[in-house]
Length: 288
Length: 341
Ligand SMILES: Nc1ncnc2c1ncn2[C@@H]1O[C@H](COP(=O)(O)OP(=O)(O)OP(=O)(O)O)[C@@H](O)[C@H]1O
Ligand SMILES: [Mg+2]
Image 1: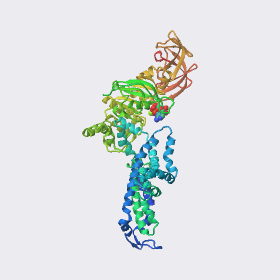
Image 2: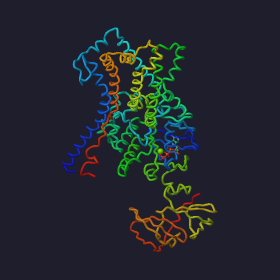
Image 3: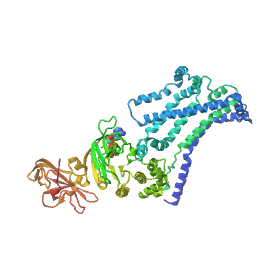
Image 4: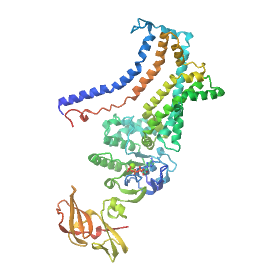
């Protein structure tokens, strides 16, 4: 390998490392792009039709949200509380289910998978109409707990699917190794399994959070109007005639979702740089 | 010092399988001894190790120094197992990997670091303490995995194909290292291999398995010099079998009478002779043989001869040069003819 080849190799590796970030950047951009007009609306003072750009800026929308009469703070807190509860409950339910389906073979396994997936195969709306009757009898209708439970209907199956696929690709030998080195089952799970499945777990949690956060119909049916979420506030604002307030609401609505997405993307980045060392680069010119 | 390990009629059937993966397996390993479990792919070697480690629930019993481990979970057996692949905890660096067992057993923090460093030193990996497993070569990962097991001072060490992932030169180094550490530490060790040579070079004794059953358990020489069955003789590279009627100290075969050194009961008998035991020259059991084929082996020559209707394979020194079609005198020494079932 000559010096020139070596430098070419270095250059190509640097280029490659840069390029690897491009797909992530594009993904983030695509996720953020539809938010641009909404974000512009949220801070515009006056923006009439043919103009590409607001003619004046103002924080009127956000100030409006801060006023007590809008119930914005209450809706934000409710939405966050429900979404966090749904995320936690989804993981608690989906983790054992994912382990069972992904890592073990047992009788009637396919039937169990079908039952787990049923809520997303049948439209959740249809399921919910049935659930509503039962919830009225149980006193769960019009309560936050009822809403959390009904959000689990679409959230759990996705979380189970993701976690089952994570466990299906694990042989269990790494946990077995840990056991023979002195780890009790819970220690092997805590110190070996959990750190290794963290990215999958994060994706499952993100999905459960987003499913709950953006839920509208199910909340309205089971919550019956007494449980007010941000999605409901946004829906009623959007059918009103103040695009500035709607824009401000939409920005707040999108914020946790985008934050969560960026966090997960960070977690999914490989922790170890897998780029080959220079002397092992096969495609460097002159080497073979 | 390692413990005495006893396997008493171990059996295991995987859920849903028709046949037992391990059937009725009994053997004993003395303290500080290293034994090889040898056998073709799928014969149940890995399963046997998992049964010893307590990772699968078996019929039969495993005993350490006479104490039954029937209801002892893997983490309290002090039996460390190194799997064939997927060796290290990828989310920990080398040092954390090696210290894992000590942390799990709540060893004093102040003792962990020195013990980890000593273990890394033993496998010559001290300079790699801060590396992640993905930044190591296969051989380096293997050495770290070995250190991680040894640092827990196991009473029995189980190794699943410890050398199979390495290329030839690394394999020699690793074998020496393994043997050195094993002798030094006096670890009772069971290792698995499907390579007959590996078993011979590393094992004090060899357990040969076929289809879940232990066919023979003895010192390496016995497999070459005293194989009890044709199958075992063949697995250890014996290729020449001669059949005949035995009476009065001679076996009457298709090629003529053979004198045997071994005592044999009269009747229909088969004897085996290894390719490297056959000699050129005259004496007892000498026959005129025609050269059919020769092949250069690097360390010698392999010839195929015809003695009448019988074909025999012989391995001769490289300085013997015979050509196909030539006729020579070939001797099958009586002491090298071993009767089998
Ligand atoms: N998890 C499993 N479920 C069902 N059958 C299995 C399982 N693992 C192994 N077996 C079967 O049990 C038998 C013994 O397997 P084992 O892994 O012990 O073989 P081995 O001797 O280690 O083979 P190799 O040299 O290829 O590693 C094989 O027939 C195999 O197909
Ligand atoms: Mg195996």
